[in-house]
Length: 304
Length: 262
Image (cartoon, rainbow over the protein chains, first blue to last red):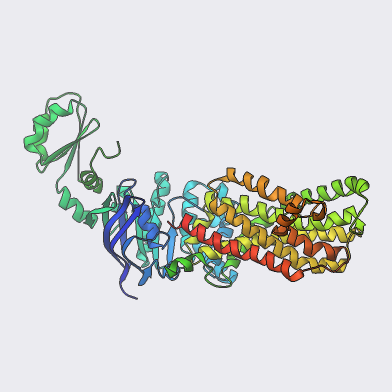
């Protein structure tokens, strides 16, 4: 097996006249966690579908697990586990039955499936729910079952479309912990997210998309260093325009988002001195995060 | 180009069974209610029309009206069972429940899924038609041996109507469109195909239309046997039913590919 799990070269997809994916290229190495980040409508889900052979690119080449896709996508899918954006479990079935039915789609015998079910239940922390109907599970449990289901064929590669969207923080942290366990056991993961904390915690490398184009690629830390590189001061309260003129000489960049000012300041103390004595301001200084990179690249006022 | 056909066609001769078994597992949980729902309608027709109208009609084609009707209801129950399974349950799995989407993430193709769904709908049709035939035989309206002959025809009828309904759901944007298929195709077919009265009663042009109806072809195979006669043009009727089973299958698989794999 080569050490390249996914390779995209010049992939383009149009829906009607709308360019959804625009000349996209990237490579994911085996054992890596690769993130596709972008605002809604950036083309993330379309790319995930193309990797599975469910959407055909209009131009470019896709190779998944050494196989050309979509030409040989059926064979490629034997080695892929999918966590879709929206759970599509069989609600009238129990947890165990969901795994059984799904294993059969991969041509596994009932005996083979029953042999792996205990391990999957343990992995998903659903041992006590094995015979509960899925319709009665919480959102976090359903998500964990979807993840366990994606592992039934012991895939080398996991394709996850927004794996933790809609989950509460506790459920989300449990999923992240489980994904890190999978990465430690050698699986390759490609995930889409608009959740920066998720990408920063999990991804070895990621690629930021906007309107189907790659606008940045690298490891989270490299991207943070490259695009921000200094602490961020958030200033809340007061008149943003007045404050900007006051502090502009002391910061690299300053941006307004709603009522908050984001200052990228190599010397934060200089900024603080300027603001000293002003009542009603809340000032927060913190290290830069991937979210700052994302918002810098895609614009703070994007989703208006 | 070739791979598009490959994605729309069954990958092999057994993948579909996983889909069939999924539906069977779901059905087992509600088998009693499901059977009752499927059988109530043809039974009510059989005994309601058979005994009530039967008194007025007297004998038809040398048999009592209820025996005449029983053969029609065997075919009709297969038609409705596989039609309703497909237009409601399969449509839900295809569009709303994400069942097909989940399966398409595995090594199955769209063709495997469509074949599995078809076979399942035909199985339900087979159960319904067989039950009506057994009831008819138990009540003495048909010979027991004729039931054995009727079984494969009932299964084929189920396939044909599941396949036609698959074409309908491949094209329909929502559930609201199925009423057209029901009221403009399925219900008229009941009256054009000799299920409740002989086709010979229809005006000439309708008789010619009836010859193309899958239900009429099915009844032409079932009724003579259940009434203890030899049927005419057996090969022709079987051929027609096979055509209705096979052509819409390929066409619908292609349409689903266009709809789901954009």
